[in-house]
Image 1 (cartoon, one colour):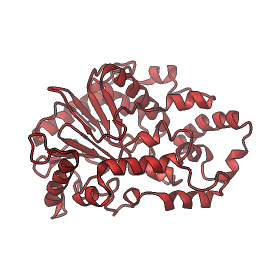
Image 2 (tube, rainbow, N blue to C red):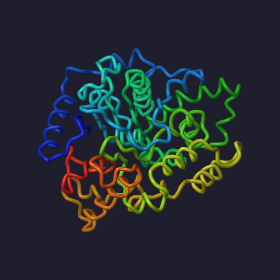
Image 3 (tube, rainbow, N blue to C red):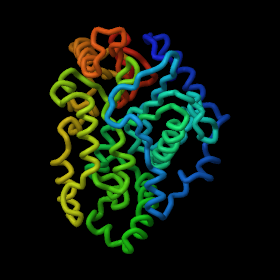
Image 4 (cartoon, one colour):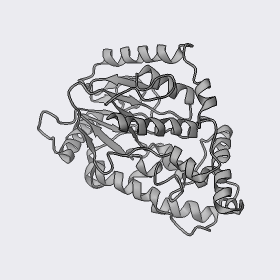
Length: 358
C-alpha cells in the first residue's frame, strides 16, 4: 500500500480513507503500464554491463545522514512491499501523484519512501527497480527524494537464498545479467562458480556484484523523514542502542553489500557461507527474528492491535531512542510514528495510538 500526504498526526479514519482512494486508483482500468514497459529499458535489458549498471543506480543524496528535514507542507509518500509487481507499483506511483503516466517524476520536492521487499514473489523485479532508480534520479534534480529501504528479501537474495523467487523473475535476471557479464568477461564460464543456483540472479544480487555500488548498497535499513521513522519491519530501542543507531546500521549494511566475501572463484556453497558469515547481525533472521527487517511485533495480527502485550511500550521507547539519535528528543520535532511494511495487511491501517502505520 501507499500513503500520500503531509506529515500529520494520523488517525484510523485517515488511514482507511487513504486505503480506499488508492485501492480505487490501482484497480481502475484507465491506466495500463504496458505501453511504457514495451518502450522502456524496463522491458529491454541492455547487453552492455555499464549501461545496465547505470539503469540500476539509485540517487543517494542522503548518504550517511539519517534524518530528512521537511519544509512546511512538503509532501511525504510511502509505498510498501512491491515484490516484483510492476503494474501495482506504477499505478501506485501515478495515484500518489509522484509520476505521470510516462513514469516521469512530477512530485516536485516530495519525499517518496519505499520500505523494502522489491524482490521475490513476482516476475518483474528488475523492471520495478529500474522504475524506482529512474525516478530517484529525476526526483533529485527536481528537489525531491526517492529513498529505498532494505527488506528481508533483498538480504535473502544477497545471501544466495532464492526460495521465494519465481521462474519468471529468475528468467528476467538471467536475461539482463548473463549477456552483460558474457560480454564483459568474454566468456560464459563465470556461471560455473554459482553451480545450478540461478547464476544470473546471484551474480546480480550478491555482495560485491556490479550492481552493489549503485543499487544494493544505497538501500537503507531505516530513515527518518520529518517526525516519521521508516523501516521494513520495525525498530526497537534495543536495535538503536545495541547496534550503534540507525546511521551505523545503514553504514554496516552498505559495507556488507559493497564487499565481496570470499574469493571470486569460490564454489556456490562457500560463496553462500562467506556472505552469511559476514552478514551484520541486525540483518540476520527468519520468521520469528527480532531483526529490523524481520520482526512482526508491531504488525501482527494484520489490521488489528498487536498481540504482543509489550508492543506499546516497545514502540514508545523506540521513538524516544530514535529521537535521541537524531537530536530531537524532548523537542517539538521528536519522532512520533513509525511506518513499516513486511506483514501483509488488508489495507493501510494504524495501531498503538497512531504510532504504528502498517
